[in-house]
Length: 119
Image (cartoon, rainbow, N blue to C red; front, side):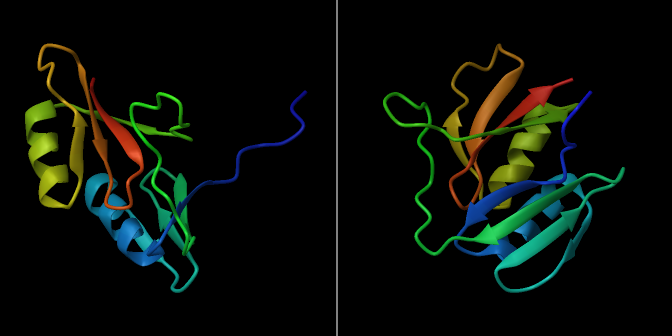
C-alpha cells in the first residue's frame, strides 16, 4: 500500500511565470497564478508547478561532480521539429551532437535540463 500519491512536480526558478510560459508553449496547457508560485495545468490532468527561488543556481549537465537534481523527459514525434521549436522559445542545447540516438538534451530558460525523446 502506498503511503502517499504524487501531487505535483515543482521546479525552482527565478521567474515562475516566465518558466511556466515556456513549458506551456512546449507542452500546452493553462498557466494559472502570479508571484512566487505558478501552476501549469496540462492536458490530461497533470500539472507542473514553478516556485520562485531568487538564489536559484541552475543544475549542471552532465552532472560530473555536481548534481543535475532532476530532468524531464518529453516525448515527441519529430525530434528535429521539436528541437527547432524549443530553441525558438529560449531553450539551449546541452547535448545534441549525436543525431543518431533517439534523444537530445537541452536546458530550459532557467537552466533545468530536459530531454526530447523520440516516441
